Length: 285
Image (cartoon, rainbow, N blue to C red; front, side):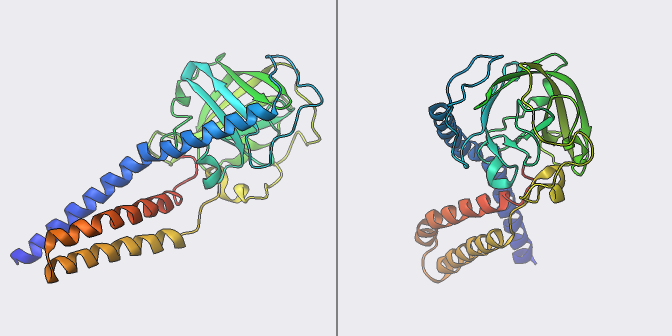
């Protein structure tokens, strides 16, 4: 009975340590790669975009950015946001920074331009979005110019409330992120109205549902598309196998040399497992 209790206790301790490591990876580890991606995206965007001032439009000879690069830069000075925006709201997209919802106008175009962002992981660009008040400025610089919005409203909705992405007759910017912090139970919606310059016209309806994006976002609601479970399961089994082999080698050979040799390999595999497991979470947590 003592051996059983001891074994259960060790298992629970090990599980607790793994959970702690995963939480630490989510809150801090994911930010390292995001900062690297942001630096590269901003450098790329600045190279292909002619600087413009607020209220002005870019010259007609502005060079288009690559399809996988930044579509713009969003700045919210009141909460310290200065982030390159990518196209798409899937897991891989939002790992790099805030993502523009496909099927909605680009910022600066007429209608309802929508952007999603992480709140607690991958740099947490929208962590303080709940602190915004009516009238606070939001600036988005794209290859078409620099556009200034002012916050007009905020509300909390369910993750399936895709009506917040629907086309509108006014010129607005809709920001979405998870709510409350450290949870994916709801979505916080911030709506800002274009203050200048005049939005560029686009050929889009002003009523009815938004056109379904090609990446399946509409089917996934405001959470974006999810990643396949297979890689996470495979890497989890690999980490468990290394753990078991180290334990067996410690009993058959020598405990500490076996653990010393296995630990670096286990940590590498565990890191890859965490990376794949985190992709199963809602894309904008």
